[in-house]
Length: 228
Image (cartoon, rainbow, N blue to C red):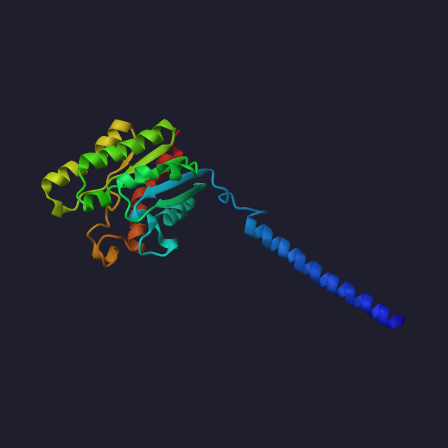
């Protein structure tokens, strides 16, 4: 009987020790999952950027890891910037659609917004005056709230004719000057019309194309982050 009790006590202690070890490991795992404990200096972002755009921002046809906001955040962190980039891209969005959902984007309280809208306006042949009004309304809200802005320019497809292209292409530099915001002249610079950097539709960039976009726009974004 004594032996049995001793055996039972020993077994209970062994089980308790085993459970205790599991509990400790579970707590450690939970802490790691929650980001508690030793952290890298870049772990807590101090600056939030909303990448506010259409399918070019959202990452149409790509894995989530290859979308522009993710690759941009990675590049910024490699540059030593404690930044989080939110994917606020919606495929098919026009400037009117972006204007309508701006409140949703601002709910994340971004410190800066990259405005990449207008490609779908051009593809649909929307009056450039309407595109300009929508973008102006977006910029007005952002400026009024003291949110930093990087305006990403777009160019009209050549098949729409010279007159349309001239009016559309002038929108971005004119608005950048009017609202005193930095301009990245052409979001697809170095990527547009290069088959190897675009998906079969010839419109949306591949993962390699996104890397090219990030490389081009990165210095502009860094300046926005570092602005006083």
